[in-house]
Amino acid sequence: MTQTQERTTAGNARKSNPPAFIAYSVSDQGRGRKFWTRLGGAWPQKNGEGFTVFVNVLPIDFDGRIVLMTPKEQDQADAGQPEGAVDAAAPAEDDEIPF
Image (cartoon, rainbow, N blue to C red; front, side, top):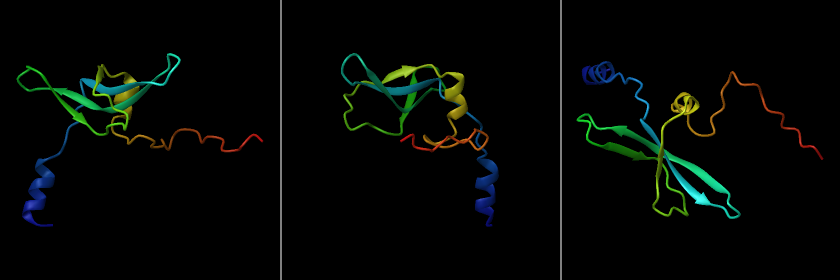
């Protein structure tokens, strides 16, 4: 490892910084059903005068509206895991097809 890599690795240890808000897109699926897609998160500016929004994905049917919601405990716990990740401590699902 070079000195630059050592400095970069040692100097950039990231702290957990959960978002102040979770960004969602809400699409109408008909008959009053709504489908919420998590897009990313919003973090407050250091000067306290606004937010920075990071969007990881945009749905195909995106209408331009983003809903910001305060994170729930489950959202904060899942923030480090990619969507669809499986928790090794969770019990395995039954994959048996019932027909």
